[in-house]
Length: 479
Image (cartoon, rainbow, N blue to C red; front, side, top):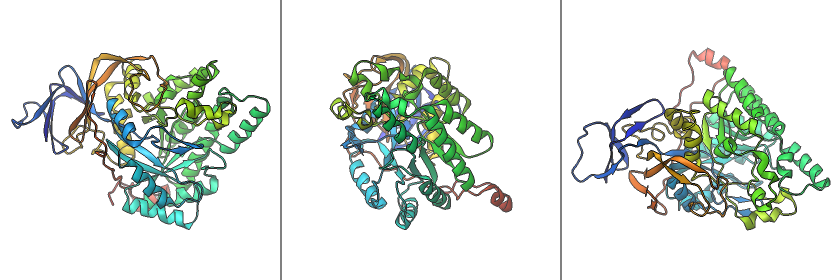
């Protein structure tokens, strides 16, 4: 199939230019003006619009079994909703249960994901440790295209990774050339604070942020970063929500450490007043971890994006409907943690980022696709509009608007944390694998069309003395 996207301004992370984009066989084959176009080509008119790489959401949880229930969004509905919002690839998580065989868990998630409508990949969580886990990490990197491993420093008694697990897993990741990702919250402190609050009779959603104050996140972020520093392994902090953890990232980066930070669209725009709403259902739907923070933290996160201390944006898309949330009606610690957003991330970031002047168009591309592609080693296959790249792109109309609502979104959840927000600047066409999968409200996704994307490991990361001995910096290599 040949597709021509004509008349738009191509916006990449590094530059913008007036150009047409010619697509054949799911790949971009030409970018420029006055292209030699086959007569049979289908044409998409991008006049007056920007043509940008499709978004990459590096943090989603489709079909996640969690806290006694299963996330309502499956891989087909979730990747369809993503495509409707301009995101053409997700990186989800394989999360083995305590003592669950890591490879069994990986195969289970791969089975669930076969219904995906757009491209996807997986981080794999390390939730326990023995020799079989060490071996599985090698198998995953060498045979299954996994180059990142997740570590939950929270959720005591379930999937929490203590310092011993972090040290063993970080060391193994360094040997393999993989990157370590971290959910930074001190799980022991959270558990203690939860018990104290319940003793005081605080059982509603307002107890959630009280049990997970910014200091709990900041301590864990600094600890994970210091462990990574000692072991000389790159580390990526997911859903950085507060100034405390941002300061830890900033310090480390200014010292030359390989540290990356991710911000969620929700944390950039929503404050902790939601937990004090008298409507339990409203407040309960905002229970996620880390929680939404006071307004000063949002401004800090925006500055982190602007300064480059935070490199990516995501959603932590993990949907639970009202009846699921109400499992914790009398005990906030039992409310399933998670919110939606995979359909809305690009729109709210453009409206509040680009339209406000906080981000340039090119910076928008960087934080919504290109940087994630670079950090997780799939650039420029993803995250760029250039010859040879996958034909995943969006046609973005900066003048059109939409009002976000649970009544019109495509996400499989009966709530939207951005409910009623009107955003200016939306995708009018989404192209995935060279095919139009969304066009001005017409959804054309197909179950099973998504491909699993291998992410090659990097060269093993050597410490300062070893690099000095070798006389050169490590480079990314495909294995």
